[in-house]
Length: 314
Image (cartoon, rainbow, N blue to C red; front, side, top):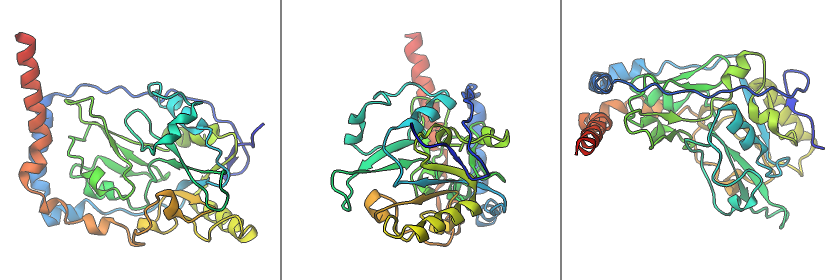
């Protein structure tokens, strides 16, 4: 059988699943237009500056994924799917043909696993889990004109669907391409992404993917503790790991950390990110965006609604 689930808070546990399904209430479209119109007044440098007063939390939690332990079983995908009430995948979780192409998180899959060739051991591939990395200073939050994103004291970066009006600035600002847009909901703009099972964490549990990994490749705990664990593994097994903890410094640091046996660039990790938080580069973003680009999601939605109403009457 597999290894026990790793919980860096002290001890191992199998976390009970919870129904994390959220239902989206249909917004009044005029409310969305009003919000979109109001964003124009947020586009000044002074107002943009006020949106980026973000800072980390000393006791924030995090995740450490040891890619040398991952076997590509996709149990983390399955656990995430169940915890969030997501639809069944097009390719079953036990089907390996999914690795024939590289995937990214979508509106129906908050985390995915990709396979890569291992030059250190041909025939022994390396698997990489992909999801929101929950930046210490999230650029998605700094780019959002309506403050739909929040960095919580527990560590996860959360998204408020009731505030979002669909501009998708967050998708442009994210250095990890994590936020996914639900294109099936034209009148209900919705960005979806991993929440690190924030509700479970607040209740004293662990994220579903960590609880579902049979190999113990995902460790949950305080970020500071995880960094110590990672450094200790690198020190004890220098031949096993590259001398880097991905997420320790990239883009100002992330709550999701990684260890690997081969250079991270060979696993499609962005390797040209600055150590300085990217929020510094997005502070003036809103002021440089023309008003028409700010309003276009609402305008397109209005056109869609008008055409749909016309078709129904016809």
